[in-house]
Length: 225
Image (tube, rainbow, N blue to C red):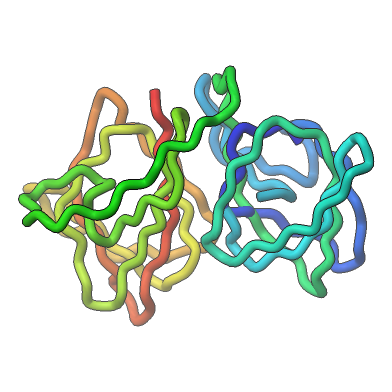
């Protein structure tokens, strides 16, 4: 599978151990469902690496080298282009979402993460400074935020300036309110149902909360221009 960024995995693997050769899944493949694609990215459900469910796999590279990998729901990882096969070692299927960056022309270079500022925040704040949004990874292509809303807590109004993909991990209901507008109707949370939102050149500001009986957990992947 050729991938510049591996995220929350949204794939169903067979219970019976079976290795799959993967080299850029095709649109018509029964193992990969393309959820969104444009000239910049392709978002698809596939059998690879942000974990929606727990994962335990054995990967085998083209040169025969093997590696055992585990991943918990909400965890994510970066992957340079690679050709490999994947074998599910668990007793249950796993699910993942993968975002393939078409324009990544050189290896990713990690950006050191800075500690949250202790200074008072004035709304609206940039999304990466909103207290419920925790930056867990960043390089020159993407920024990954782990976002968690306990029941009853509301985010600050925050601004998204980069195209982004929200990948729900868990929860039952969520709700958003645009700045100056009304709260939306509560939306069902469907783990793994990734959604793309345009923001580069048309930034938007809103706040979010869990609108149900469960905390709302989502991974937000910002795509840098």
